[in-house]
Image (cartoon, rainbow, N blue to C red; front, side, top):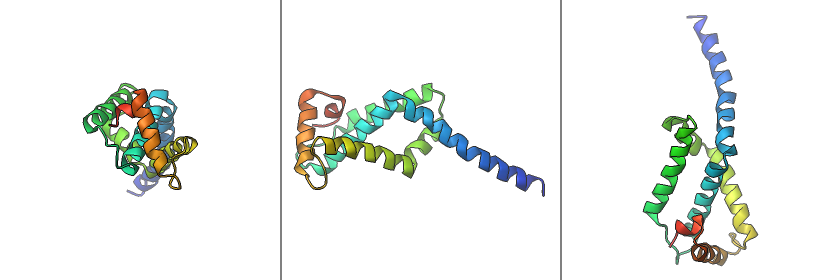
Length: 133
């Protein structure tokens, strides 16, 4: 038993960096990374613009396709869930979405900018626009 505790502690110390490194591959994959950022942008628009709603079934299909890609890369559902649920990762994706929206005139100081960006994305038929109506 006394040998088991240090071995468990060592395993936990080693596992933490591996998890972060493992997520680097998801962050580095342009389809998954951009997909999550685009989804976050669409969600921001939907949550801040009363005139625009989310296409929930299309959004579910979109997220499912990203999950399938991650599974094809060798990640398990539990690993994908851990990645998506990680608060630091959520903050990172939200910050990137906020940055892109702000560059287009949408920010908490310019709330109408969210509707403008949303309408532009819908009109363009972009991936973001296809998640909205």
